[in-house]
Length: 336
Image (cartoon, rainbow, N blue to C red; front, top):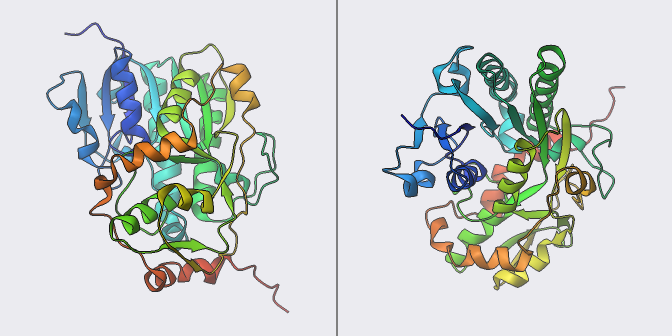
């Protein structure tokens, strides 16, 4: 038997979850990962192979029971599991609501019954819709597609369990996380995965619009540190925006990656800028970003072969993949 404190990481074979596992191991925790591996990759945990203090349960989180042994004795629960991407959520809204809302309820009930000290939920800044910037936590909530709605309703469940059952929780609304070991498969989505595969193939980067849209990119190890700070604190019942607080344009990313670019049509419902007001998390949790955008991009380039098997997107395949986006995200006219 080990005397190490226990943490549960849902979605721990995924991009951010995998880095959370690394941090917890460094902090001397026994880490129990639950990840169905549909969105995650067991490869992300390969460097922990042989470590008896890191275990993997490949169930779907909707299979977690209220008195699930996986949560027994756990001090902290970090909830990253769920399904992402905009277009698939428009096409499969019921699955998104089931996984991201009901799945969260399963995690909350198991956490409540296990008496965990803190649950930290990975929420999404997409709940704000086309937000004013910099965006504060009290900004109006206007989710524009089912993924955003499902992540927000999962967060509502989190705070409901806090209010009704006294479960200690905090929620972190992630803006734009990037870094090594990000997802290499699945639907057309995050700009880094698309561009890195294009760079490996010596193809032009498919830049949406004029490339002057900006995103509040935060390196993944800084994300993990923020989640640790939200767990290892007396602060509870709070929501925090998480970004670097310093938006970067897509053109700046292309400049750092190096190479040619081609332009594809701007998409309806996409913000020109995402920008987290991080004053709350920096003041209440004494957290601040450590990795500059330039250093973060260089770390990725040093590990670019990881994206060798990722899908190679071009303007035609992107147009096909985002057809649903244009169909449903273009503002609807009221029926006459």
